[in-house]
Image (cartoon, rainbow, N blue to C red; front, side):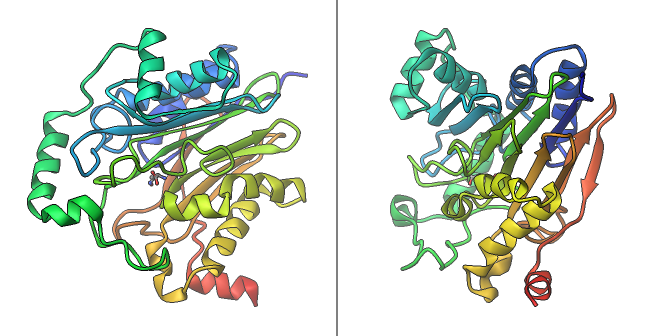
Length: 325
Ligand code: SD4
């Protein structure tokens, strides 16, 4: 029996991706194709400074991209980490899935693979992102840039490195008319990151996870924290146990916060979107301001031509304690 297509995307800028993704589903394309098309749209948009072309670079001034795609029917997955000088990283990830016996390629060899697959060498810096980098660089000493004072344990927040819009991955979930699910993630990661740092977005189970028998999830936020809790896998497993998508996202974020000192909770910006195999969907975030008080966590859902922007469902320290109590 045909299913009503659904497309989800993180962030306010995800509205455009959700529109394109839903249209692809509506036109009969697979969930995987819709994820790739929506990811490409954001990757090619120079105005989105946390994904693809125009993304903010690492501490050495190079844009390093992370992206992944996963299919719900068969666990097929492909991913790239630290991919430089290449546009459309989610498409490269799909080629890894389809053309190699592996899941993940990283760094220079991922770039070499992309070239062999016909992705041309490309400059990923825009005038704006180069200028932002130069301004940031002036505020850092050479030793800051060389090592970063990340503190003695991972529970110590990193030195504030960046501006409020320093990172925002596009996480994507799709349910197609045949009832197949697929998910994707694509990002330039944390601005000014240590060169070589790979975040949660291309890690299967962390940035994204999907299983047609249950549902799918994708995340955005402080990847170094999120990957330690395998958040997307956890969301899907909680849905398997009967939680709704929203409940599963909330419960996963409660789990993440529970493992970290309350006084640092506002540091752990983390947000999740999820969809169940029957099309029910939801999302949640650790706190409303995410990494800046005036920036609401929002995500887009499309069940028709015009996507809706969703807000709310914030897992703050207080709601964590209340729900635990
Ligand atoms: C990362 N999770 O590289 C990404 C960044 C992000 O909202 O999504 N920020 O850690």
